[in-house]
Amino acid sequence: MNLQVRSCRPFFSISRSLCVSAARSTLTAIVFAGMACGAHAQSDAPHGRLITSLAVAVNSSTHKVYAVNEDSGTVSVVDERSGATRTVKVGSGPISLAINRSTNRIYVVNTDSNSTSVIDGEQDAVIATIKGGSHPYVLAVNETTNKIYVTYTYSNAVTVIDGATNTAQALKVGSADGIAIDPRSNTIFLTTYEDPNIRIIDGATGTMIKVAVGPHLWGIAFDEPSNTLYLAHTGTADIVALNEKTHEVNTISVGAIPCAVAVNPITRTIYAVNYGDETVSAIDIAKRKVVATLHVGKHPQAVAIDSLHNRVYVANVHSNTVTVIDGSKNTVIGAYDAGKNPYALAIDSVAGHIYAANYDEPPVTAIDVSGTATQK
Image (cartoon, rainbow, N blue to C red; front, side, top):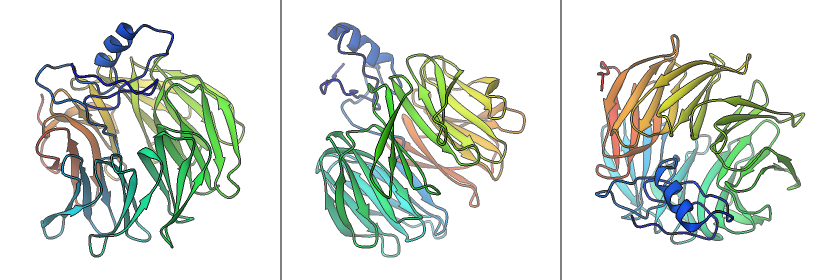
């Protein structure tokens, strides 16, 4: 297994794996990484790429799909209306992207060239390249303020891009693995895997406070109606619920190594993907209680929710499939074939398609979900 350790940051194979504390031995760290969220221990698998669940996204306003191609330094663009596909050259090692639907701009993190590319969604061409710190990782867009936040694996700051001018400034709040935004209050939430504190940043002033929630956080999602941030706590098999206003912290027990979480705002249900025991936990938000535990494919990695049709989709990295869950009954309907090692998902509910970013070929798979899912 070709493993590369970067200080006490997570290291990677199929996906960003989980870092154990520096107090543990190197051997323990290597064994844990091979079984951690998204790691791939199969001997025939490629190794060494830094990939995230933000590798593919859909602009529901234009019905265009954007997916990173890390090896070629490009972004694939699929026009759902015409079926046309093209590639846009960006920086070296693109691993994540986000869309500002209000401005029709796509922001692409290029980890190997320490930059963020700005794509004009009308022309599907790069209109700006913004330099930042070392090894940018993930990003998030606040459409209300037209600000874009880029995190770094090795940095003491987050880059804040002004979407109107494509200029950037550093906000010195430390490095981060996870990011979420409450656009109503202009609040930014940052996590780092080995940091036991969640950082809460005021987007207007840049001031920061920390709330202790425990280390080894991975998935992150914010629920506006309840003003609650939900965090997947891989080490303790919990979902952490943090109230944005009061900073009260609660935990909900789920399956082993939860690594992704998503909220259905209509049904008031959270879905937590448990990589370790290959299940999904459905959680009633009001009761803060697991109401169903569903078995999915081998080593599930990502989750996406179609609120319009009350369907939940789960990418199974080692099954090469996407599991479909009926949210009204919280039962597994079946699964669709994806490409090899799907690790990220995006949905166009209106068009009736989901898109899976794959570690191997093809880089992105379009799945028509109007058809019948099969049992796999």
